[in-house]
Length: 171
Image (cartoon, rainbow, N blue to C red; front, side, top):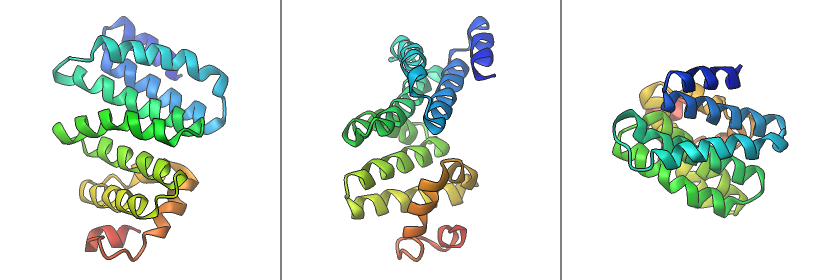
């Protein structure tokens, strides 16, 4: 389905939607452990990101979407340093354009990487930030969609004094 949608959007010249479909495909491939197909999907996504590296408007989001996908691949390959490195692109874009969902995802993926590196305080700070943004903008589903690992890590910040009332209520 995702490949068909990406092909459809490609035919219409809707590159941002193509990137979103390919990024979702990466998420599903990582989640289901189908790593053999990742290089081909990432190559297409990276090509789109390079094409739109200096774009403006909605196409400016494409490199950030690719960065989130690249971080997922790095995490799946046990490369937390690589994940943190590519997440910088997504963080900058999300903050510049006030993309709340992307901010939540970037913080959560960074928390996964920091957790892998046993950097407990930084992990907690990123989780708190993700929860605060998610609760403020009604994006709790974004947290839940990241699965059991997210649930386990989020439970670890329950009661954290940095959480505001709304964030604490959602945990």
